[in-house]
Image 1: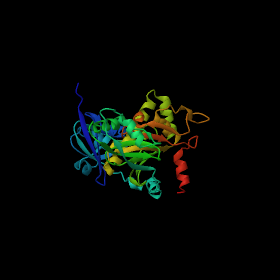
Image 2 (image 1 turned 180 degrees about the horizontal axis):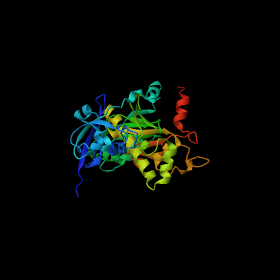
Image 3 (image 1 turned 120 degrees about the horizontal axis):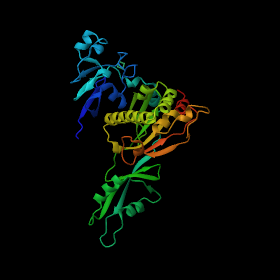
Image 4 (image 1 turned 135 degrees about the vertical axis):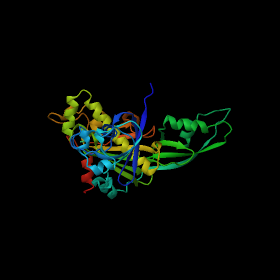
Length: 353
Ligand code: FES
C-alpha cells in the first residue's frame, strides 16, 4: 500500500520557515504538536479555547459552524483558521502569529558565555600509499602517523577512506579531526566543519545552541516550546501521565525527540551545515526531563524520596536517541544536582546571571 505524504511549511512572523512531511488526512494541530512545533492554544487541541489561530494557504477541510464561532468575519476572509479544526490533504503553507525566539532569556545567557575554550583541531598527516607487494591496511598506516592518539571513526568515514586507498598512489595527504588532543573522530581529504549542539531541556521550553568546536563560538541559537505540555503543564503531571497511561512514557519520549529534532534541523538550516558536521551534543535539563529523553520510567519522582535512577553523567551514540546528526556523534548527558534539580540550574548559578 502506498501511503501519501504531504508537505507542511510553517512560516514564522519574521519570514523564516520550517518544513516537514506528514501523512495526508492528519489533523494540523496534532501533527504540529507531534513534530515539536509551538502550537498556540490552551485546550490541548480540543477545539474549545479558540486560540490556535493560523493563516493557511492551500487546501484543507471546509470551515464548520462550530469553528466559525471562534473567528471574526475579517479573519475568515483572510484565510485564518483554528489549527485543531483543520485536516490537511495536500501541501499547505501555515502562517504562525508567534515565534520570537530571540527574547528567550537563555539566548541572552548563552550570548554572555559565547567564548568557550576550543578543544578540537585539524591535523594534517601523510601516509604511504598501498603497496602491492607488502600491503598494510590503511587503519595501521593512519595509526602510525598519529602516535599516542586513538581512532574513533564511523563506518561511513572508513567507507570514504576506502575509496581513496588505491594501489599505485605513492602517498595520501589526510586531515584528522582531533578532540582533546587524544581522540581522532574524522579523517578526510580536506578539513571540514565541526560543530556541537548544547541542549537545555526545560519543562516549558527547549533551548538549543550550535557551537563551532574549533573556534568555541556559538553560530546559531533557538528556543522552542516543550510540546510535552500537551500532556501536562509541569513535570509532576507528566510523571502522572506516564503512570496512568500504558503508552504514556513512549509518547512523551517521542514528542520530546521530535521537538529536539525540530530545533536541531533549524540550527542546521540557519548555519547551512549538514547532520554529518555535528559531532557532539551536551544535554542539561531537570532530572524528569532527562529521564523522559532517555525513555526511562520516571515513577521514582512520584513518591518520596523523589529521585530518579541516575544522577551522574551518561554517554550515548546519537542513533540510540534518534537525534538528527552524523553517524559518529556522541550525546553527553551532564550530571544533575539531584532530586528535581538538574545541571541547567548549576549552569545558571555558575554564570551568575
Ligand atoms: S487548541 Fe484550543 S481551539 Fe484549537
